[in-house]
Structures are given as structure tokens and as C-alpha cells.
Image (cartoon, helix red, strand yellow):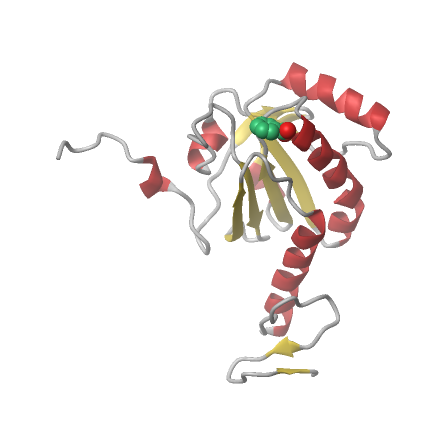
Length: 196
Ligand code: BEZ
């Protein structure tokens, strides 16, 4: 077998590993991941501006942004479109929708973020995957999701996931299936949920 010069899969970020750094132009100017130290970050990628499913997602992300801020969590979007396209799309979304887009969308034209986060190649297209990386305040990757282009994500589940990670950290506990904020937790050494 011929040796490969480059295998993108060996470089993919893993849970518990440091988030790959980036410094890149966005709809809100230059964004450096290192500036987000001390906050949780929900980095989400999507295939393309001005597409139907992505439009529903951007509006939904804008609607949960105030709830995320209360959880010390920042949103960063990313696609391989350019800044002008991002700003034109955002203008339309804000005219149509109820919520301003107050978070940056990275313009990953040189594929800096896409390559580091394994967003491309994707489903035989040149568009980024519909992925989510949850990065903790120490800039460690704590959760990863990859969705197909045809399926919009569930912002309620993303909120629940961030709350579950935060509770697990603060209570040194785990969250059972279908856990919702306020439900009982599972503590190390136990098979059952309990209140403490
Ligand atoms: C969409 O957002 O509607 C979409 C984008 C790329 C491929 C399929 C659907």
C-alpha cells in the first residue's frame, strides 16, 4: 500500500484534548479563540449562508443566545463563506427574524478552522459539515457532534448538554439518560440517581 502524505483523520480533535486555536476574520472582525479563555464556547459549523436549513438554525441560535450568555457560554458560527456574504445574510435574518445575530460568524475561506476541526471533506461536498464543538473555559474540547446537512440541530439539546457538563463539573457527578436541569444526579460509586 502506498503511504499517504497526509491523513486528515489523525489530526482530528478529540474529547479531553485542547481545542485547536484559530485567529480569523468574521462578521464581527478578527476573532481569536484564545480571547475566549474563561468562557464556555459553542462553536458550530454549517454548510453555507443563504440555505434553508442553515437559515432556521441561525435564527434558533440567535434566540437561545441570551440563555447561553447566562451560562457563561459564547456562540461562534463558522462556514467557508466570506465576510460580505455573512453580513448580507445576517441582515436578511435580522429583518425576517425576531432576534439580532449578536455572535460572530467566522469566514473560513482558507479552511484554517475546517481543517483543524475536521469539518471538511464532508459528504462529498466542499461545504463544512453541520458540527458542534463545546469548549470549556480551560479551552478543552468537552463535546463533539456531527450532523448531516439535511438535519437541523436541536438548540434545546445543546443547552441541556452545556448545563449537564457544567453540573457534572461543579457537582463532580454524572447525568442520567434524558436528564433535565433540576433532576437528580449519579455520583461516583453509585448506580442510582440521588439528591444531595
Ligand atoms: C440547508 O441548509 O438547507 C442545506 C445546506 C447544504 C446542503 C443541504 C441543505
